[in-house]
Amino acid sequence: MRTALISDIHSNLPALEKVLADIDRRGVDRIVCLGDIVGYGPDPIECVDLVAARCEWSLMGNHDFGVLYEPTNFNSAAEQAAYWSRARLEEGARLDPEKGRRRLDYLNRLRVRVLLDERFLCVHGTPRRPINEYLFPDDATNSPSKMEQIFDRFDVACLVGHTHVPGVFIDDPDFLRPAEFDGTYRLEEGHKVIVNPGSVGQPRDLDPRASYAILESGDAGAAVEFVRCEYDVRTTVEKIHAIPELHDWLGDRLYEGR
Ligand code: ZN
Image (cartoon, rainbow, N blue to C red; front, side, top):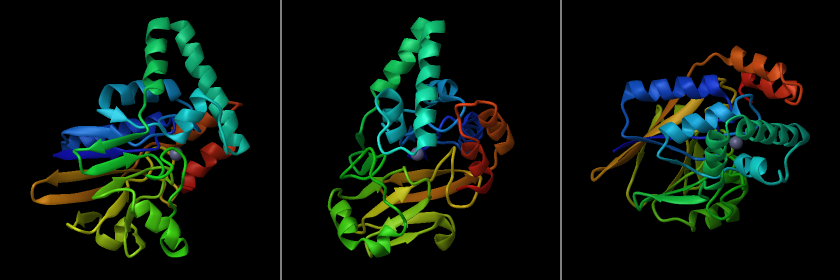
């Protein structure tokens, strides 16, 4: 079974379209999304519709939650983007009530956790605070008790998003970037891992290319291949710059991948 893992799209339609085209070329059985379809970027409506059409399911991310309810612990640019995204979705519901309501309903029904194939625990943040706890690469060395508590919360492997940094946490503990294992990480029985596929729409590992992963799983074991995908960053940046409610920085950072 080949499962494409996408996450943190953040209303970046050119990035999402490129990633989906790349996934189609590689042939997968299903696509799942680990949350944050919206927030930050210029195309919330189009991204929700595309995820709803192409993904088997998506999780509730902190930005999806913030757009639906109240943004909490957001910086002012993120908060303003959340209110703007909500206004866009509400406008969409006014212009086309049936489609618009179905779209909002889709967001409202996003789940907080999914146990995929009874083996892979999927959450946006961490297993102990599924919507909004960050598990940063530095935590592997700086926060041993946090790592221990989080690894205690699942059995085989955990799939997360939220930090926008692709890689694998192992129970040593350590964080391994894809370059450290040539892009494909093989899961070994008895060794728990936490996998983050990185972000489609706002990478933060100083590589501006969209990031996602393909999980290959079967009786013989499982492996995760990390993939990067060039897209037209400038189009997204220019759209962000043209929307007064979206801070210019939300566009500028995409050029640098941070
Ligand atoms: Zn995010």
